[in-house]
Image (tube, rainbow, N blue to C red; front, side, top):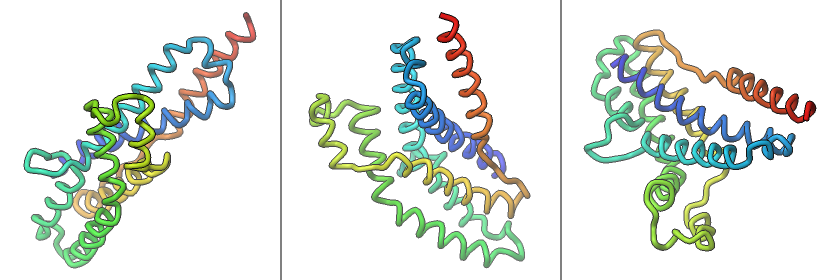
Length: 197
């Protein structure tokens, strides 16, 4: 079970990191638009790839069905099936499990919208939304705000941490500061290049 939790965190972290890099880069380009012009085609493709992979990776975490194994639903099912492993805190875990299931039920509209975006735009071109002029309809049909998915991922790590700490005294966390540092270094180099040319 520890190995499952480690891998699940890796999947969540990769999705989170892609969103974080995408958002952080976007904001840096707003602050320093001339930097994007250094290599506009590279940055456009990179930003598109980050967004695409973030959506697909996040959607995988919420797939349902018998073939879906590395999901947050599977985590909850495993915890429920192995309640006896929690010993004296079994009742506390049972209560938390119920509240975690309710949390994901309350996020069902967002999760369904995420799956629609993945299935109709990012992973498969849907006839109804294929043309650029029609993509606005997808945004109306399955609305999501910029911060919705990162918040969902952060809460999912908190849920994972509850179980991993109770079982193995392990907690997981994101390293946003490292991403910020790396992107800032990159922008420093680009800005130096602009100043020298």
